[in-house]
Image (cartoon, rainbow over all chains, first blue to last red; front, side):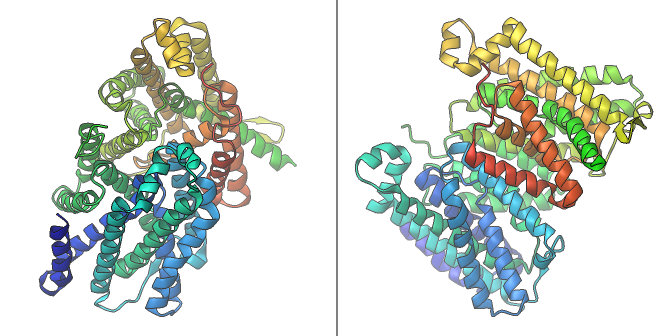
Length: 292
Length: 287
């Protein structure tokens, strides 16, 4: 399975050479969605924190990149800043947030996300309701494709490492029973903080790459709560399949969403809602269900 | 000074309505532990039903009666066919299910009614009532009085009837209630049914107060969530207090900072309360 996955990644390297723009765009969005899912899983699957508002970091990354790039900062520096700003923000707020559990944490972070969206929309310096239209070179979408692929590969390998390593096992122990882990002498703070930093950095990077890809961003696009739901929907379906699940489901859903959108423009929202409900009702424990 | 008093009056009128708007959300959350993210869509379904009945020329009282009856049936079906299937699984599965339902309902409303802003202007509710310098618009005043009466009726039901006491018992201690011969699954159905009817009723009032579109549901659910977090679940004092804090923050921030900052201020208060007192100021179970 691992060899097959690495072969897919290797083939993806050459995909832009022969693919037409439509398929390149579709695969880029699948890479983006799966990277976002893997990034959210660093907190959700590994530690049991459902950061429903994790997209806040994606939005922050996108805005940091777009703001700096539109002020004529070099592309690489803008991208680097989009990786660095979200962790700073997460370090200020999320350690307090991590005191919340389960759906309180989920909705608390979601509220934070919507709040950031509203703040950004109200400040003219950050483009207000108009957002940012970026002046990019014609091959920006190909650069973004490789950036998404890089993020996906890194997050995939990180997930693989966490599944096999003692570090990952410690995370699982903390998720299962924090008090018992404390009695074994495990200090949870470095573990939680490292996962939080890794998540916010990767989401920020993806936000920056997204701005490069779409060339136009506004607050409702990059802080979109629907994106959070799509991600958590994928993560619940991949609950017992954390290494390959997010990528496979993201690819499947991107093709599905695209087909629905292009064939049923009027009813695609209805079908999307119905699809989410049916799948969650049929597979409430994820598709590869292991009885515990 | 007059302006502050006028703003306080506005906040009070709005708070009465918000208490009704959140009562159903609080009931489902308090009794069955479900955060119903499709709640706002049910409010809008109520608003569109009253709007349609009004266009058809139906008597307003009958229209509200039919809407509430439809809400009762919808709630029972919702609990039986959907929520019961996922009870006992991870709570996020229910969050995703209800969000999926929200997307479905919003898009169905959009298919039928299109995305135009609709509003309901009843001839009999136009104009205002004046007390000295202060203005009390008739529609806000009537909605306030009806909302407060509904809350009182709900309280009487929860405290004075066998079913109401059973709802509170299940919320307080499910196993204890089962030992007393109460069937929790039936109680969940009844409470979700009442909650959905309350959502649709408040939707009818929503239509009298302001314009609405099929995609306004997220904001409505957030208001209900705010009231439940700030006030706490399980008693009417919490509901009224949470509603008053929300109304105060909206009215004052809307007036002094601008409409665009209303949501930011409410969300900031929500996040602070989540961190400081996640069970609210007056939160107890339905005891």
